[in-house]
Length: 309
Image 1 (cartoon, helix red, strand yellow):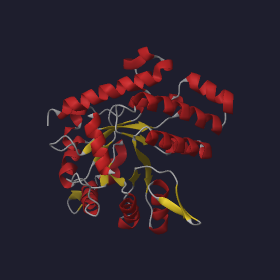
Image 2 (tube, one colour):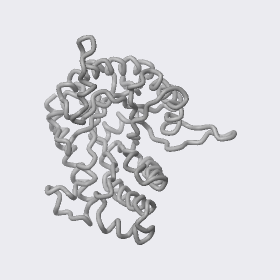
Image 3 (tube, one colour):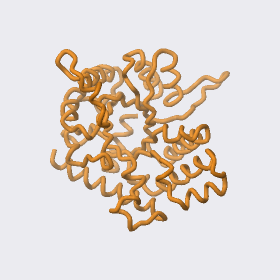
């Protein structure tokens, strides 16, 4: 799957992923009105609003980008109906030819980790049939439990030719409370990066990159520079662009000299672009067109920065 992701990045010229994180306050009123008229002000109504919102955005941007990243918590908050909307979103994105990175941040041990891996990347035996549950192409994984928590995901990735992105240095302000702690003279995130590189040797793609990638926040460019060297064969998923303050110029060190090796995420900066003063002219009715323009602007920003490599 990492090879397919690289091919799509090359084809689109867009090393970006759009985070489909649909908080209900982002959904325009006319969509909520339609959904609530049909399903009521219920969890089902909220899930329907989210699905309509997602679909219009996907229809507007799918030809510009290689991948999307739905964050499962934004769907889980609406219970079972929300998870149904998550599933519809995943299925629809794949129908549109998009690679789906399930932002699920799972991590446990033994049979529990295996079950998470099967749910999101693999298949599960039901009677005599193997059935697919959510069916994403990649998943984000928390490494805190060590190899016991990661190896089941790698095993499923080997079977299914899928991939994972392991949290290494996250973009949030308090990430340093643990991730920057020095251990044997090096910050914890560097130790994790070294382990990601070691895990990745088990599963290499044809393009020289591993199916085992890393999450490194755009808000920490110097750490990104270091971790690019520590994990030379790992693709880096880079959150924190746009709404969290990072720009294309902050990201050049996350990429390799060939302009590959990283894929940059923007979530509310894209899906809620119509709420930004820059795109206010599109109005709430034109929210999907605003998202498309925000994608085009992001691509231009990152491509311009990559010329500096």
